[in-house]
Amino acid sequence: MHAYDVALFVHLLALFVAFGITGMLWFALARIRSARVCGEALQWLAVGKTAGMVLPVVLLTLLATGAYMVHDSWTWSTPWVDAGLTGVVFLGIGGDRVEGGQAKKIAQVLAGDPDAPLEGRTAAALRNPWFWSAAIVNPLIATAVAFDMVDKPGPVGAGAALAVALGVGCAAAVPLWRVRPVQAPAAVRAE
Image (cartoon, rainbow, N blue to C red; front, side, top):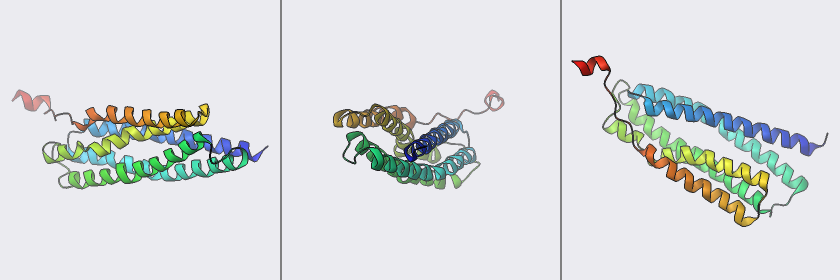
């Protein structure tokens, strides 16, 4: 067995783990959007935080195995390799600094009164465009990097894949900047 094959296997395994975590994060994000009180949204933010703690290890694994494969069989000046590195840096910053940083700010606001309904100031905190944009853009950037790794396009194609992912992700995030109004339970509305 060649070391390149082992590196490729570990690389793909890390990619599968990353997409699994992403699915879990998107489930948590959907639950945050359907939360009625601050404490409920806080619980789902905590799930996202826990899952987010694994992603740096996954990114480092992808980077290390990818670096080995490039060193073994490719060059660092290959356009799709450059796009992959750009994507990993973007994911590191977008995930940890942007999404994670904004999640902390949102959690601080929600923790002020966990039993309060999500309205007013707390609803405004959940409309954070940086948080939602990063939450949508990051997985699309990862998908664009995976596309570049498989298709191995030239510089225009590799860059275009990242640009399309960024543009589509930002556009898809805009509706998430709004929070659904909290509905009172049916028994309360009837009174």
